[in-house]
Image (cartoon, rainbow, N blue to C red):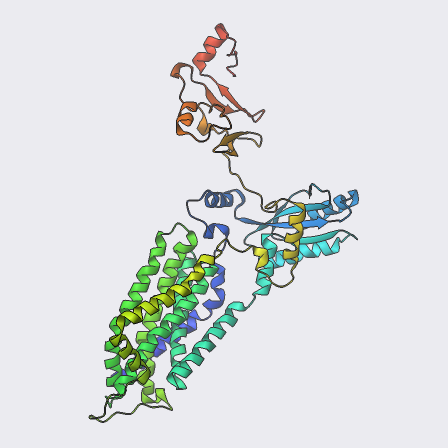
Length: 514
């Protein structure tokens, strides 16, 4: 009686977890963080710039590209119309800034770069933007809304409700497999109920931790969470049910048989769960933010799979008894009955025992042949435009954009410079065979400018050390930004200024400029 009462309490507790965690499955997306910084290394400059942008604008923005093309060439009327539509696009809720029309080199296209608030509903914003283009349509001038925001909106439309469909399909597939394995109607339902308990409980904890900013949840980790919770709980349940069936063949009492099976399986199931939890927590050492967040999410899923399989499933089996295996209910065997063995696996065991070397050599060769496909693996990635197989305005716009503009023109690079440097306060520096720009900043004051490098100098550390040698202290020039011109100038110390005022030389002026 006490065992049955405990089983009822356990099932009631898990039903409560399911009642609270079930609705969270539809709202966990509100705490997801799928911005670009979530999939970048934490130490990357792009991640730092992404975080700094939030302090400038109060939040992150995602670019969208509005493209206009006329095959015969853009006319003056087209430019006026596009300028008017740019103002209308700026009035769309969720749009922060719209650039002026940017003409293409071939003179047949104009594009607008639109900054959209990341917190806005991309599908709604893109729909209103496309409505502006429809209202301002000019004959012969074709228009598209494309870029990351539009691609995301089209992806959302194409995959809306897919998470629920995939979950139902996965549960149905597991049910069919369990039905074939157990040849019972009640056991597959019991195992799926245990998997659902593990899923809802883990989602509830992950949601609360993400809401408290303890972990980072992405769409990737949310999908893996569901697969791990259902898969691990089903695997653990298979082992427990198999041992329970064996015990029922020798024990008249179902509760005693269940206790025996639980004691035999708790150690291997616990060891398996602990191994997987420790393994996934190693993702915390990764430099990628998405991997760091995936570690604790996966660990929580495995932990709840272990708890559900070792508490909820025994409670359900205790209430069902032998009826759980209906219609093939296991009966107690006579004491002198021979043990029933599987002919197939007995034959496999005898083969491995007789010819162990042959078995492992053949197995290794077969696995090696199957692994040869890894040499043809193309891991260069797939463009976003190739992921949508159905016709969409964003994909068509990306293809048209590539005909008239350079790659990446719709997603310009963002450069963060020290405060006080104007837009012209940049000087080019050529290094290591490349060309890049760096700002003159107050932090670089007092450092001697690097000497001009020849194109064949390479990146020699010796030449670099010579070019940056510190000049004598008494006449050390400093570098600062001229607010009036926005240019970088070199100035000398106040003592040098006094000397230059009294005895000016050919290279030093009274204003101390070089």
